Image (cartoon, rainbow, N blue to C red; front, side, top):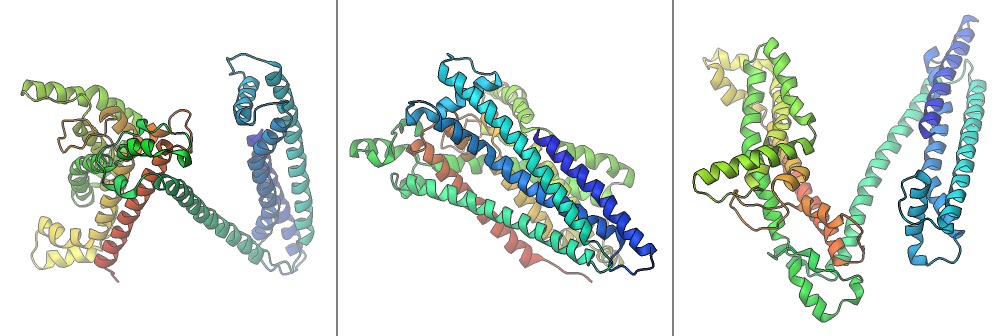
Length: 461
């Protein structure tokens, strides 16, 4: 239904565009000078038709589920307040035909009420959006005249849309930071931040305390040593290092080859083929690492007399490195191509060879972009989860042996939040603390990248 309403809004906007353009064209035929081109009058009425309708449609779709849930829950007879959310989820499952539990009168009556409210809300939404489209279109159509500053009005509307989009992005970022911060503060009110940052034992499953404010001294002493995150930081950095040892040289060399040595025909085929690696789902890489790379290293190591785990940092790091090759290769290729040809010609003029020109002139000139591509690849490697889950394991081992299993921060965040969790438990709150730590780590990487680019940036005429 929502998709149908959205398509109807777009269809009406397109229709009134031609209507406004036609009216402006007819006015110009009367030898009256228009302020703007006829197309701008079409854009003007189309924006007046589409933007208010889309805003109302979006707000309605956003708040409709919450309002329906509130109305259904308030009409449930004599229910435990702590189980209202669970009952509502069962009502939704029964309505959608996916409920497999015991059906009672509460679920059946709640389902009927939910369906009735949903039908009422859907009909009201269609009626309201239709009325808004009609009224706004009539208003904008009547405003079209020779003196209407259509171009200026369209630019104002577009400027407002761009500002709103930027504001939404900023507020979303702030919301993410605040959600991480508030839950992390609750976590650090129970667990010492020093123990969290410098502890070497990670075992959050030991912390099954439901209410963080009611933890006794004995329980606190038991779980204090369960949240040492050093093994997670070390595992994340170790796997990312292995991945970059694969991706950095291969990606950089392939980028240099495509930019400086490959012919147009070779480049036409090789660049898309390399970039296909970035489009392969990470779960496919995970299966490849778990079913092919991991067993290969285990068998190869056993032939050499080495004890290699079936889930190892080496397998995860190598496959992850292959996955992020396109990030380095494609960006390096682009920044190398952006180096002015005059620098190459000047180098050739003083007798330098092609390889000397690339090493002494082209690569230094493209260095900020190359470093930026490497830092982007590092961020991608740090944030990867699926490959680590399937190829490196879940054990938080503090090791520098690539043949042993280890885990990363993102993997542990996923594992902690899987299933039904109590959000006032230190175990669940530790995921937010890890997320906040990872956020600051990526922030530091971005700051370093900006400083490097600013320091080595070269401007050309």
